[in-house]
Amino acid sequence: MYTYQQWFSEITIDMYIPYSHVVDASNLILPRSVQGLTLFLFLSELNHWIRILLYCIIFLLSVFGNTLIIVVLMMNKRLRTVTNSFLLSLALSDLMMSILCMPFTLIPNLMGNFIFGEAICKIMAYFMGLSVSVSTFSLVAIAIERYSAICNPLKSRVWQTRSHAYKVIASTWILSTIIMTPYPIYNKLLPFQMKDKKSLGFQCRMVWPNDTVQQVWYVLLLTILFFIPGVVMITAYGLITRELYRGMQFELGLNKEAKVHKNGVASSMSLACDEGDGCYIQITKRRNTMEMSTLTPSGGSCSLDRARINNSEAKLMAKKRVIRMLIVIVAMFFICWMPIFVANTWKAFDKDSAFRALTGAPISFIHLLSYTSACVNPLIYCFMSKRFRKAFLSSFASCFKPCRRYPEMEEDLVATGASLSKFSYTTVSSLGPS
Image (tube, rainbow, N blue to C red; front, side, top):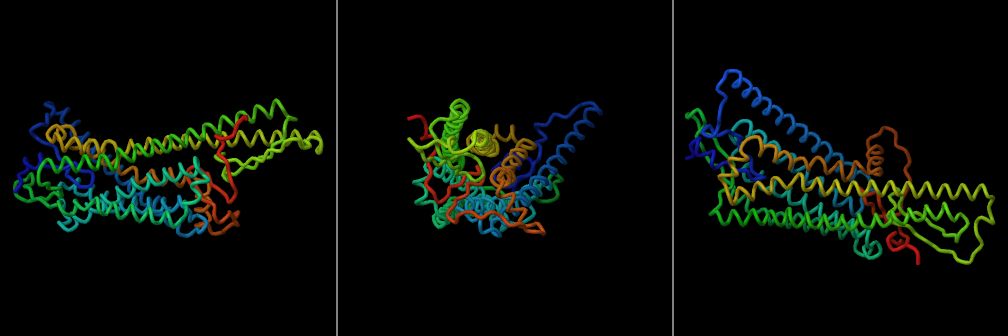
């Protein structure tokens, strides 16, 4: 049986297992003055309530946001696209994390005792790990799908179907189910003596056969759930950003050419991005043909030039917003997940120093940071999409307005606002002076 002091050294900081935030009295230096002690107690109480408030806010935002995404995507047939299929899987996994992770972390932390029993200890640990794994793999799938749609639109049309997306989603859930099997196997409910020396408490934690197995496990998680996904996302979104940047340079060239050569060679350009991100354009060059200026009044020609310049400027602004969004996606992934994976790996290789540095408020806020991903994903991937916001309003408004119909084969890239139609498109990076 664990004593209260022994329990300090066995407290887990695993990202999936609730632990009790306690303070080792042997390492605690209390203020000597009454005023200092009063301030210390006040700050401790303030820290306690701040944690509760932040947990509640993130929990409510995550549950509300992911539930709305699921409802909107299920109610609107027009939004049942390849990317949105991955977003639906992401929302389900994030919702599962919010419901099965946050309450079972916060309540034991506040009480200093896991009161839910060994069965719940095993079940919730397994589903916590499952939700984290599925969320990470879904983010990777979205990054790869967007890269293919924007950088290789013609090739991607062959395999970018909903049936293929469903197979990928099923594979991510099955793979995550297999990867997380150690949690119900090694997760146990361990007794310890409470601080009052009269009652027993329980902690839900992993009991590994030896330190080597524990170290291998955390290195494996660090590799497959953080390092590899991070590299894939950086690479995919980096290439997308480069493609959009080339498109921006092309648009700037068009603007300059339109301002300087108003009566040059006519080019018929039809914009292919229905939401104005300027990821694709369709060009039909007309050489040795009669210029439009000879067929229309000069005033109409100037209006066309101004309209084209304004449209190009709007596309440039949209591309800049897309690039900023991609940077936010990668940054939030590393901000939310790097601390917890580093803490787990640190704990596996140097338990004593990790406990001294992280026990209490630090590990609590590290956990909170990882849970934040469940509430920022809906904001980044869906609510920043104009089309999703319109679908949300049409789903819940009392008066439904008719919406513009899109081609059936159109694939919506929700966050970037980029979509492909049934026509053949050329990426802007491949266009330029011959």
